[in-house]
Image 1 (cartoon, rainbow, N blue to C red):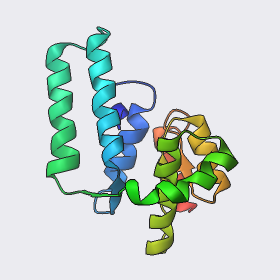
Image 2 (cartoon, rainbow, N blue to C red):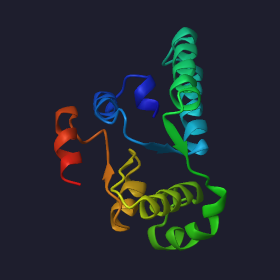
Image 3 (cartoon, rainbow, N blue to C red):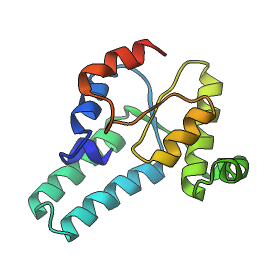
Length: 152
């Protein structure tokens, strides 16, 4: 999500994906929200964004994710025990394993294809190994997003 609020490699792909997904249920975790917030703060602290850009990005994040009600939040706490085999099998950290467990359970419960969007290569590899389609916005061109989604 940080790519949505500050330009970097993959920003155009994320923007195109979210544009195409308008009206489609989207899920997120509160941990993902906090991580995005933290990334924006690190960029401010590192001097790569201005205080004004930080404030604008932080506000946009809150409006998009919290106040718009476009996202359903997946609880991670209930997936901790389900994540333990994922940690062993895919060598993921506990947070990524819990996120993957939550997305896998959600996908199975709704019975429709869901896509995990991330740039973390280990998380992407584990998601794909578990049968969850995954998109790395740093490697998929914005114009290729419709074909990617159509192939699901």
